Amino acid sequence: MDHKNTTNKVVTRFAPSPTGFLHTGSVRTALYAYLFACKNNGTFILRIEDTDKAREVDGAVQHIQDSMRWLGIEWNYGPDKPGPFGSCIQSERLGSYKKYAQQLIDKGLAYPDPYTQEEIESFRELAKNEERPFLYRHHRPEKFDEWDGTKPLRLKTPEIKRYEWNDVVRGKLSAGEEMLDDFIIIKADGYPTYNFAHIIDDLEMGVTHVMRGEEFISSTPKYLSLYDALEIPYPTFVTLPPIMGPDGKKKLSKRDGAKDLLDFKKEGYLPEAMRNFLALIGWNPGGNDEIFPSSESENTLVEKFSLEKIQRSGGAFNEEKLKWMNKEYLLRQNQDFLLTYLKEAIPDTITSLPQFSDERLKKLSPVVFERIHNKAEIVEASEAGEYDFAFSAPEYEKELLLWKNDSSVEESLPRLKKTAELLNDADFRNTETIKQSIWQYAEEVGRGEVLWPLRTSLSGRKQSPDPFTLAYILGKEETISRIQTACDKISG
Image 1 (cartoon, rainbow, N blue to C red):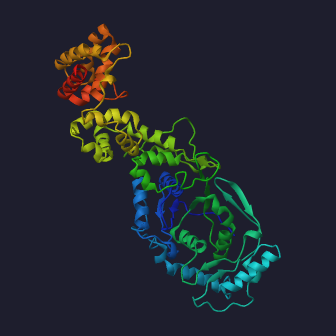
Image 2: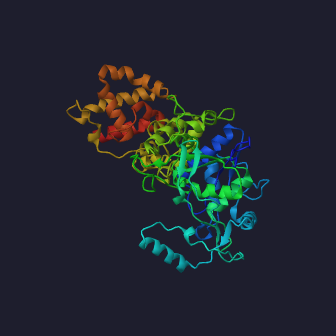
Image 3: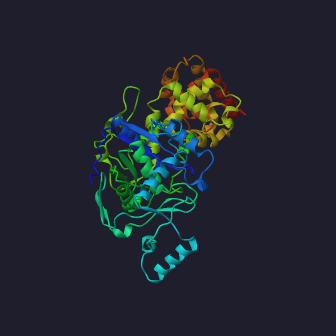
């Protein structure tokens, strides 16, 4: 039988089950399938595999769509976009599965399971006692009753043989007859099993390339036996490497960061950064480039992507690298974007401070983005009081104003007064004009002697931005006011 794919148009799919959150491993599968379809001017399908109704979570289908659209993945056909083949939701495709099941019955290649669950368990126990693997086909009935839909329908494995198949990433793979068995294709509740439904869907939707994780390799002989039974060509198999935990030794777990994709959105990761990061876990385009920006006129990731560069070995989920990558993308944004980003992240504890204003927040923005990588870090820094100086007059003991080379804090008093005079006549247009107004004096008297008490009087902290940046953020009036307060502390 010729199993070569004769379809020229590339069709890929992502087929999640609506049973929980969409974690990073699943999303990377979707991303690769999407990139490959885009690269080849093909079709990308989002299919919802909802045949396990007992495990389905309310709202999960919408959550899947929201997650993928946030990441910048759009589908040609999906739960909200039926195709020429009909619905992309499996529970709405039951007629198709019954049609192909009937074809197998007519060929004598499918039969209703006559056994109760207790009888099957007794077969398993017998195999265990005889120290051999349990295979259902060893108990296949000689005669089949007519299927009335009330019992599970099993595939009669058409041929017991060693299967060999080619995988784009893994090369030639094979498995022996021990991997073949008469598996259920339609359950007693009328819903198909995954093993059956995904093959029928792929056939009717014209899927040419099936991308999935390595955990499916052991099941592939079952799938191939079903392709043979239906006399349909095999698609191109692409086994993706696992996403490993930070230590690279085991698969990523929830504990390590396999969390809901939209949690990364809440933490302030940009979708283009997340897309870039996920693409590079298990795919290496070659060269030294790690940032692949996209725009309306250009999508570097699509242009670079190829199946041949997918790696066999798993790649580690390194959140520090994700943070770095997000910062790189933030640095490419304009000031309006960054200000909006900052406003969305700043908690009420900051906005409720007595001197809070959008003007000061805008001036503070470069200071914030110099250090943070995402919104979560903005919240963390806010809660630590790192930005309080910009919106609230600081409280501190006068000893903070003592320069290390001085014998007493009183020595700072005349320098602060002189600095206030110079700043009162200064141009506060930017940090450079502020610096120019006092720099000559600082050089004459001593930089530390002038700048340390100035900085601490404005921030009330041992560590803070430089005094010129502080003065610019606060503005002339508040700057002079805080210096005067410092002078009063010393004099008092």
